[in-house]
Structure formats: structure tokens, C-alpha cells
Amino acid sequence: MHVDPMGRKGKDRVFYGIADRWIGRLLLLCVVVAVPKEMSGPSLAGLPFDFGAAAFFAVMGWLCFRMGFRTQLTARLDHFEVVNLLTVERIAYREVASIHRDLLSVSITLGSGRRVRAWGFSDSLLNTGGSKGQDLVDRLGVIVAERQTAEGPRHTRSRFPDWWVPLALFALFSGAIVYRLLMQ
Image 1 (cartoon, helix red, strand yellow):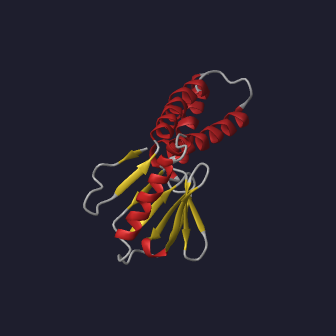
Image 2: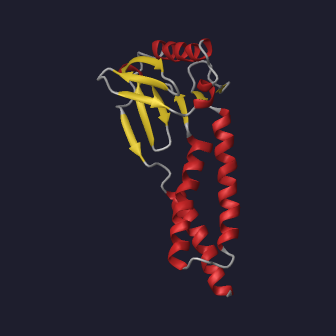
């Protein structure tokens, strides 16, 4: 697991998995480079299939973008920010009841009983057969204890962040299809 070194003296501490990020970045690179090149070539299936494939690859590219650049758990001055593939949640430290490790994630239990899982660094948890994962949970617990007095924002959850990425990728792929149609 990588820990941002600027997390001293109450500043933000960022936790994320390095292997997940590189896999997501490489897959996004393949989607952004290979798909438009392939879609600019002759089509065998027809125009409706091409646009369906463009939409499918745009969604896949968005998931690769989220996995490669966004997923993380950040301990901000007054709240946790959990960025997963489909959601972004902000949790004030005063709302945190407990933090524990699941099989592939860290789970933050709120005072209301609701659980929020942080999937952003699963590669580091896969390699933790005991003490490393527990050390991470202990560090998060210390952060909550240190910053408990901060007011913090209400618990908020936003779904489908970065909605512009699949639209931009779909426009790129559709442009390759239009280019192919004009050049035939």
C-alpha cells in the first residue's frame, strides 16, 4: 500500500493500491488507442452494432479510468473521503463507529449501523495475511481518534462521478465510425 508522504501535521493522507492503478491505466490506454483505430477500419457487422460497441467500450473505459486514477481512501482534515468505482462518500469522523478489515476491503461502520467499504486499495489487502492489514486499520483508527473533535460535513454520497468520461470516449469512438463512413 502506498501512503502519501504529505500526510503529516493534520494534512490529507491518501491510501490507495498501486497495482490496481497501473492495471486500470494500462487498460484505459488500450481502450483509448486500440478501439478508435479498430472502429475506423471496415465494418463487418453494420452501423447499429458499431455504435453499440462504441457505447460498451466507452463504459469499459470509464471503469478503467475510475480504477486507474480515482479509487482511494483519503483522510482529510475533518472527514474520510471514500472513492470507489461507482460512488464517492464523505464521512465525518464523528460518525465513525468502527473500522475493520474484510476479505478484500476496509469497512467503515457508521454510528447508524451503515457500512461503507473502501475498495480503492484491494491489492494491498490481498497481500496482507495478518499484520499489514491490521496495521492499516489501526492507523485509520488513530486518525479518527486524533481528528474526532473536528466538526466535519454531513455524510454525503454521490453516484456516478466523472460522468463526462464515457461521453468523451463515446464521442471519440463515434468520430472513428464517422471517419470510416466518410472515407468509404
